[in-house]
Length: 176
Image (cartoon, rainbow, N blue to C red; front, side, top):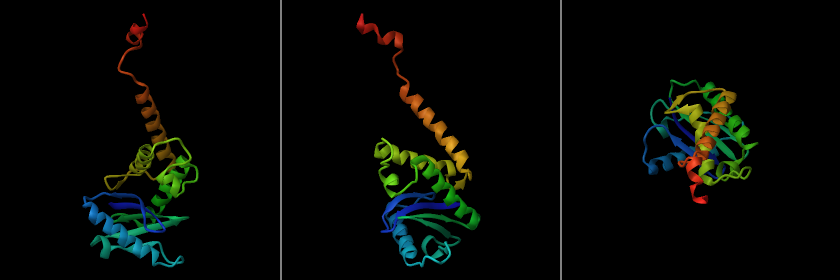
């Protein structure tokens, strides 16, 4: 089971944090700080796999990938394969790249590449993540399949925004 997904910058500022087990916000913030302390103390040439029992409790492992100014971190238990989780990080990043055109920290925070509000941006990032992992369970491992689902959600979203509650025949009555 996936316990948490975190994306943080190289200064330790969280850009995305999703925990699949209930934890109070203060505990989540503490865990993010502790994970960052471990990551920033590691050399570039060491393994991306870390025993996380001292941070997340028994049977916890952590896999991370460092891209430009961002750390992508997945925390999981022994029911998941480490290499599969590392590949899952790659799927998440590839999908974000497809949606945001070479994703960077600014895209995750503000999405300068599209005309979206901050709330819409957060919605789409969480939608992508939810297509890959939901409730701590891995749902999809193909970036292409995740993109199909996201495009379908986007179409449904656009269609639902176009629906009005007043039929066209009734909306023209004022102009008479």
